[in-house]
Length: 141
Image (tube, rainbow, N blue to C red; front, side):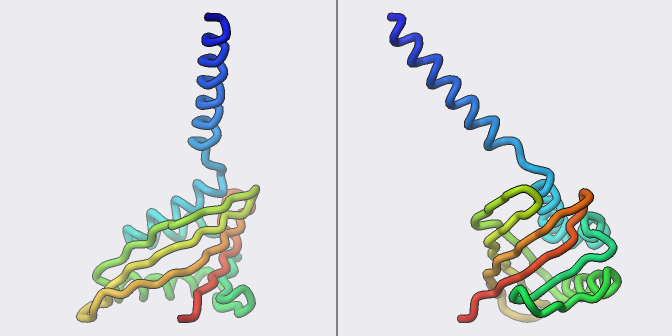
């Protein structure tokens, strides 16, 4: 009887510990989730709110393609306005400290065109409660 109670308590403790660890997203993950939610809603103000003023965005880890926050806002405003449907889903995530790496599937439809799908890896770096750097890696098909 005591052995069974011990097993039950141990199992409950392990399950509770796993649940608490799983349910507590890091601040970095919360920021990545906030920008994802705003992206899917095409809410430019909420989207830009989570990014630092000196945001850096890279394609394929090396090509620096955003020189300032205003350029980023202009680019995303054009993108949001050019699509009639937009949904980004996180397929897989790795998170460690101030870095979140998402494998994402983006489904979109530009006005008057067929729906398309794109896969990418997004690496988010966080500092001072803002996303300061994003690197995109897009597979070549």
